[in-house]
Image (cartoon, rainbow, N blue to C red; front, side, top):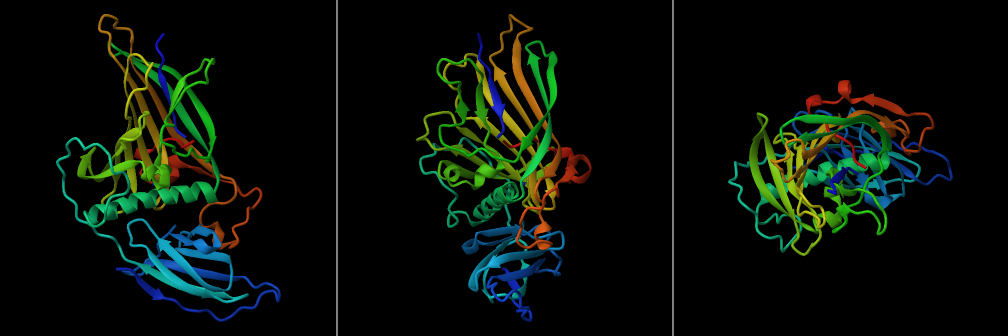
Length: 389
């Protein structure tokens, strides 16, 4: 009996104004302060919608709204360091003085990032003996690109952690026979929460417990995992240069697992828009075939990304394929097992990004759930990808 492996899927800085608004007294016993601000471009002062603003010491991190406006509260009085970032722009850190019971306003202008990369003759990469993020001193341009990849991942992490949602995906299971015939086995719809799987070395492939019958599954690391310390510390990353994919030029980031990992892991490539640095696609492969899966030669997962909000990446479609050793003497035997997952809609359960400005404390609003149909609302609709579990 052949065991197949199923996929399981578990995006120069100027401070224009640091102005203190007139004091506005609140409750006599309320000593917390509030910072309200707007994020714009340095060139032209255009609002940067859905920028990420964080006050690490206060444990607060928020998206700005569609007008680039954000609100952070409650903040303890005193000096607070803020970090503001937006895809395609150089991040900025600044200190603000929070006054008890007061609301202070700031305006931050970010400068657009411009890096010059060229086509690279990609050959086989060396064994990954020194894993970790790329060294900025060795290749500053590539380090900038890689930082933008991480920012894509961090924004998706913020989306899933702070603005929980439920999403619907259409799943199609099919196979291709040795003779080229394609057969659809099942089409269904899945309702999934935004809970996410965390990467651990050696945990990519999951087998059924001893003595139990069940499928062997592959946990596919997706965008959010690229912001996890464990993933960064266990992979090497390489500059793939510019590559034209489906007629579109993209920045390519390649990676492979550390040689110290003896169990199956993943290698592959991530592709970014060279202007906006928005993630557009990824191609992942199982680094080695698990023992006992006779006939399986390769597992590949192609992920396509879109934008749920401007510059906020979302997985719109995943196409995975398991390839088997072809038996030409049996033309009706299975050559590939295929799975396609297409995102249909998203419903936010406790408010969506930008709502924090209306209620700065970010507390849940019962019954607020917002449903978005990605077919009509999401940019790059032709590049939709799937779910993250």
